Image 1: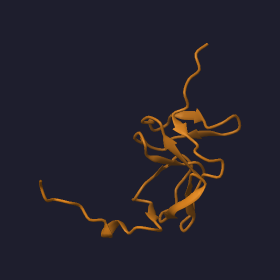
Image 2 (image 1 turned 90 degrees about the vertical axis):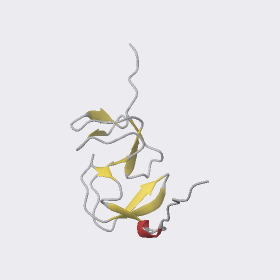
Image 3 (image 1 turned 120 degrees about the vertical axis):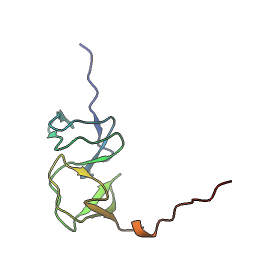
Image 4 (image 1 turned 180 degrees about the vertical axis):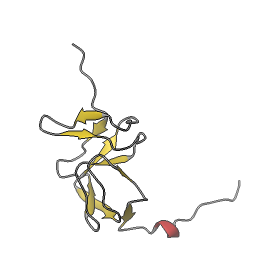
Length: 103
């Protein structure tokens, strides 16, 4: 029987987020490992993050076993984690410059 690839990656055992290997659909259920199962709360695109478990306001977002930001709005397990509910602890989004000049 062919093995079905899990649609998310757990990059480090201490991570509280998962990274999507492909788009996942709202209501889709899958196993993270032998002991953990999760259901996507909403559709989430390739490369974006899902909460591995419920996350509280102020809690650190852990990816690769290291903090990458903080939760600004509580999130349920399986919820999309992005700029609408987390902030970088290192770079303010409003300070990122974009280049509009051409060659």
